[in-house]
Figure 1 (cartoon, rainbow, N blue to C red):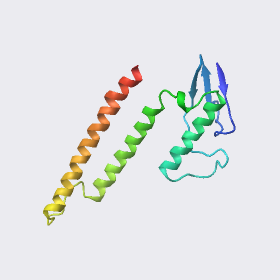
Figure 2 (spheres, rainbow, N blue to C red):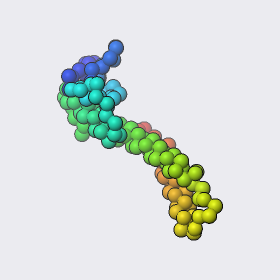
Figure 3 (cartoon, helix red, strand yellow):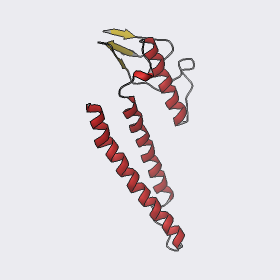
Figure 4 (tube, helix red, strand yellow):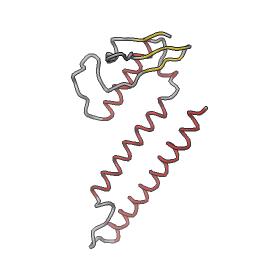
Length: 142
């Protein structure tokens, strides 16, 4: 077993390490959206945070003699994060639309819009459920 450490990723705190290599497999610790060159800088946008986390993981993998092309579990993890982001978007839509309830004096087009939003929400939640609870579990079991 070999411990991995690189200055190109955030310093691991406490008794943690950035990664461990065991029997040829690199196990990377969870990463935060911290730029090792500017650790005090806070990234606001989700996409900037995601890019930084991936850059940190890439740097750690490189230090371990590997790369992102050999990653086994990250795609499922990233998709699950996206699902959480989409759930937040749906909650914001509900907040903006009074829980998808059109105003009492809404015209037919307005009511159709709200019905379409409700259908989109149902379909998206079904999609997320199928991926998270069936597809991803099967993929990780392989």
